[in-house]
Each structure stands twice: as structure tokens, then as C-alpha cells.
Image 1 (tube, helix red, strand yellow):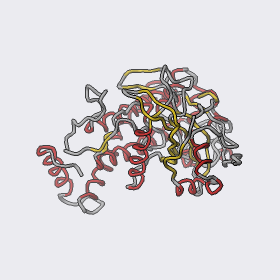
Image 2 (tube, helix red, strand yellow):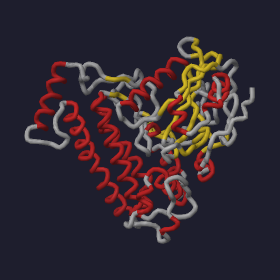
Image 3 (spheres, rainbow, N blue to C red):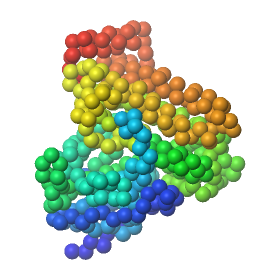
Length: 399
């Protein structure tokens, strides 16, 4: 069987930001067996899936065979975990295989989860179990089907190896597809290094990849408009974002996260671990660990067994999102203005807007659930508020 298969990779992250990770190789799987493969998603990504039989797919998506053009890269980032600062986290059991431009012209990451230990594993085994990986397929694909921005699940391969948790479990590797794996924690890691030049390059990359309209805008655009990056070819070498562009970037992330959290709340979704390293710059839901959908409606509902204080309870998610975004804003302050006072004022104005952005998106979603017009009408807000109060008081089923 010939497994010399090439994917159409164009790996800008490893090329433009090499200091934010290390080249690495996935651990071999002893007896890979394909459990799940999304042919439609593979086609959307432009992958040569027709050239891969189940055995070839198992070999590639277990990490045993690395496709031509791949540059496996373990990303490093920091993060606030349950409010506590961790200066160096990273992909302990994940690995960015590469980036492709899909059939709609969007740049997307293809990454492994459970492919073995990396230098960022912090004592973990770097593995994943079959059950949680198949669960991520079900939840992430449901989220995608109902229009909630999310990472996707391309494949799950059983490794044939055992994983030790509370008991011995069969191991697996999930292949995750994302708009990118840029997180708030990525910016926190760079900010901890106190390099304004490195932060400017990271912001330039993030704008080019996720918010190219900011680079092309008349307000605060680069002095040489021709040097502004295009959406399909991020680069950090041609330009430096202006203060106006950096502030616009924060505002764009705030808007996407406000809409995302509103969708979570409308659907009764509880993420479970809203650490800053689990909040994407793209506005996608990521890292389906201890997550769930609420049954009996109550804001104090918690799913994660390690969330003893209820920090990430259902009703706290909007507040935590704004808190996480404040951590992002702190990393960007040196790019906002010449003085710290002016920078803080600019950041605060954007962060305060989260509440109104979220409320607008949440109420629009609630009106849709009730079959009301998309725009608010006389009495619609009161009807929504009365319904939520009744659901909470009587612990009614959220859906």
C-alpha cells in the first residue's frame, strides 16, 4: 500500500511565528483502527480522501504516517486556569499538523488531539481515550449543525494502546479542524515575555488571518496599503499594526465572543472549563472536555467535577468571557496608545461594550426560540425576561 499522500498544506503559523512552539512528531500507534471519518468535511478541506482507503486513513490520522507537506508543530501558550496564572502551558497532547485553504478560501488548521506527549505535557501521558474523543465528535458536530461556531471533528482513530485514567481505557487520536488555534493564552504567553515587537507580529498575524478587513480599512491602515496582508496568506513581516488597528482587533474579538457566548446560553451549553487558554481569537468553541447541555434551567448549574466553586457555572459564562477578554486587552495595552492611561481608557471602552453586545445577541436568540420577530417589539423583552424567571423558579427543562 502506497501511503505517500500529499495534503495541500501552507503552514504559516510554524513559518511566521516559530518561537511560539516546537517542531514535534506524533507518537506511533501500535494498531490503528479507523472509528470515524467525515468524508464531507474532508472534501470541504480539499483533502485527497478518495486516495485513502480505511487502512491509509487510520495510518495518517493516528500519526503513524505524516502526509507530505505537513510540519507537525506543538504550540506554546500561557493561561489563567480557574483564575490562577500559569505562565507556560501549551499543547501537552495536541499537535498542529498543518494548515490548508479549504474549498471556500478559508485557512483552517488540521490538528491531532491525543497523539502523545510533547515538551508541554507537564507530566501528562499525552494520550486520549476513545470515549471522550467520540463524544467530542458528537458535541462539536451538533454545535456546527445548529450554527454555533465551533471546531470540527474530521477523524477518530483507535490506537490499539491503553490509556490509564481511573481505569484502563482504549486510546484514540482525534483530528480536529479549526479556523486557528490562536487563543487568549497565546497572547498572554507573548506578553509575559515583554517583547512589544513579538506582540505586534502576533497581532498582525491574527488580524491577517481572522480580521483582514481591519488591515484593509481606511481607518488606521498601514502606510503602504499594498503591504497589507491578504486573508489567505498571513504574514508578520510586511507591516506593523497601528494603534487604531490593535484596538479594532480587540473590538472584533469582543464582538465574536459576545455572539458565541449568547449562542451557548440560548442552547443551554455549559463549556465547563472557560480558562483563557480555551478562548479562541476566531470566536470558535474549542476544547470539549467536561461540557454538557443543561436540563433543568438554573444559572448555578455546573458540570465540571473540578469546578468546586462554580466559577464556570452556566450563569457565569458571560461574566467569565468578559474577564478573559480583559486579560487579552491587558496584553495589547502597549500597542494601544503612547501612555498607559490612554491605553487603559481605550481598552476599557471596548471591554465595557461586551455587556451590550452580549445582551443584544442573547435576546435576539431568545426571540428566535419563541418565534418572535428578529428585531425587538413592544413587550418582547418583557416576555423573554418573564419566561427565564419562570424557568429558573420552576426548574423547567431548558430546551
